[in-house]
Length: 307
Image (cartoon, rainbow, N blue to C red; front, side, top):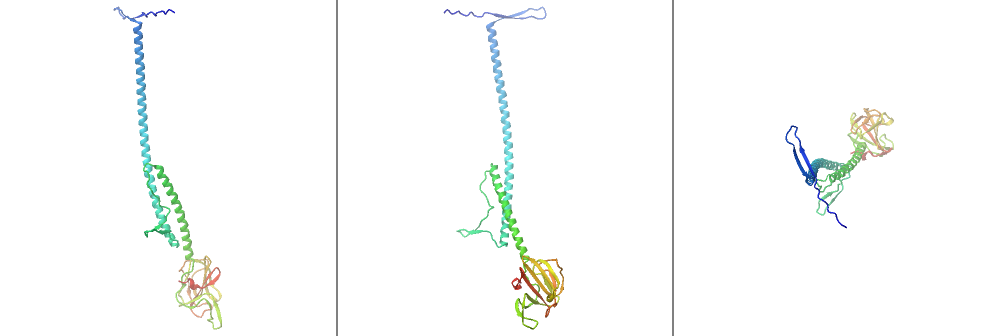
């Protein structure tokens, strides 16, 4: 097969410049090859410029994005540091509160006769077991670790607070019971008749004496031997002028033979309050107070309650 040789492109383009006036007309003849070369060069320049512009725009965008990320990281760092400071302060405060509660808890336990659990080491140093103390190194840049410890301390504080409230309730109950338990002498004086069987002071046989007699001068104050409520105040047969007090917890005290009564039924009285004065009313051989203690309705020896 015979190949046909391609003829060179000899075309030319003429560019003419025609002035507005009657000046000379300029013309320029340019071969097609040169036009193609110029057009290619221009296209290449445009492509290169477009590439450079795109790269520059991308670079600027990346720089702006990096700057924004850097600012965000700095802001997050500041927030984290602030959280660390706040969490550290809260942790210190809660640890202090736990220590204070433990100290108070131990005082209450000692008051209740239930001292804190302790053991002695081989070196002879006494060790006390406590549940509130916690510690260990914490990464300064780890908010989560500090938050976990804070949560643990808050739980321990809540548990300690509940335990302390329970102990406080027990202590209040104990103190209330102590306040309502007869424990002092109703008046000063000498015991002239004790609890139990005795020779009758009226000259015949023996009789059962359900209390103790304490002799003193007429008008000597008589005191309530525990907190309670007056359930009887007035004349009561052989007791003469008589006062009875219900202290709760099964305790009742009775006082007889007064010269005067200074309390009324339903009145609340405290241990040591004056309720009457020594007299010689009712079946009595001389000025004294007859004092009884009853536990759950049964008469018991008052001497076991008189300190």
